[in-house]
Length: 445
Image (tube, rainbow, N blue to C red; front, side, top):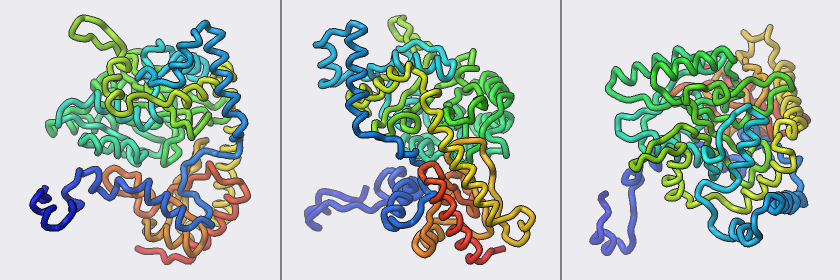
């Protein structure tokens, strides 16, 4: 670093060049979430397809106290002493949280995942779970994370923050392809690295909306076992399949301990609580011979990142779980129908403005997910941040450039459309505005 005490005395204050800071701060790709948020604030009247926020029309302020009281009653009914309850709510709580029992029961009911409570760590959203998992698993400079690409920007950001290199595994038309994972792992080894884990969102992925078939899930587990890889399964959207159309999670199919499961209540229960969880039941033998689940051992990392997760937020989420008998899948059926209606409104509006039989004329196409929050729209020009800002300013609609989500470049002529927090009326109006922007923007070779 070029800054020094002498420099600061001469200049009167400490100053930095951006290049002097950590690579995670310098990298422009780390700015994507902030830029999208600031664009939304800069153009508040624009209809926003740039967000991945969950629907907020079902939130009721009066229910906060109800959920909290329900969890307190649950603790009393299970024999927890009043003094212990007061400490849980008002003091620093256990590092790994105190609603693991409730989460474990939910996982059995919703996902057929059977793990002991001590194999669950409660985190500050799934983002903290990613940081903790990566910090625990990656131990040397040669360790590499494989990730589906395009991918959720948070996993790339977590890896860059920890100086962990990321190897892209390019997504096929139906999601991550197992043999592509095998090839990527072997390529990393051939270059002298060690592929440690592969990150993916099997159900309605952010940003593409793709979903892995059950056969592909089983094949991926086999590849992971044969290649000595762990799979980081992120599942924020799995509850929102059409009724009867859900697929088993990788974790529920895993019989070899290859999967670490990342969960969150942000989409299903309470976004503002910022409560997520890490399921890591792989046994770890410690120096004294004691064997504990990986999640329990990783508490050392969490204690140095956030000390613990909010007690009040955990209690509210715990109350929601108890109230619904640990069955969030049934409790979110109406919400799932809302998202499916919004997906249908998005695709039908796109079809109205860009008929498939006229593709040669307009050059626009999109994928059609079976659920989730997102789809990808391909256009005939560069769809970058400058184009998005112009669209928001001049046409009153925003979106997210797909280039933000590619690990190693790509997606320059594509947009991610997030429809989860727009009414069907706003979706139709937003697609109409977007269609005008697209048709009035010159296509490029």
